[in-house]
Image 1 (cartoon, rainbow, N blue to C red):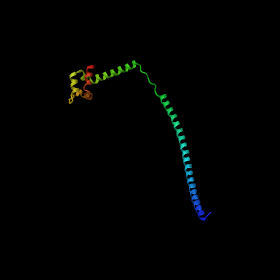
Image 2 (spheres, rainbow, N blue to C red):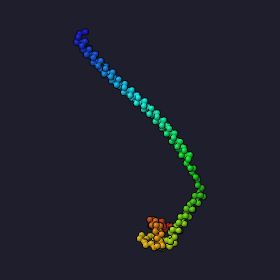
Image 3 (cartoon, helix red, strand yellow):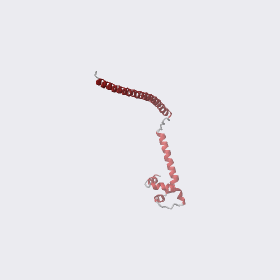
Image 4 (cartoon, one colour):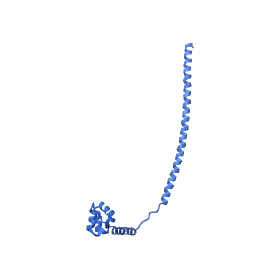
Length: 152
């Protein structure tokens, strides 16, 4: 073999050995990366397992809490129609009583009642000073007190 061919082959072999060394280093680096990624994957799987266990525990606790709430919830009491009617009549009687006690002065005297209720700037005598808050409420609902006068 001639010397120049031999020299060319040796240069080529050195280049190949250099490339081989670089590839070996790259392979070692990639193996380290793969090892690191496998470790991270293993940790991720462990974390997923822990979270799934925690989620199952929380779900069990939620089911237990819901069961406890429904168990401790007071039972709905059925009210018979007669009891509802009695409560309604009692409420109605107490409203009528309140109206009679608090509104008697202007409910009995129609003219005085409408004058006091309808007046924006009125002079309330000492007798009717107590009813001022009632009159202010009636003024805010001008049509509703007509029905109240006819009912009572």
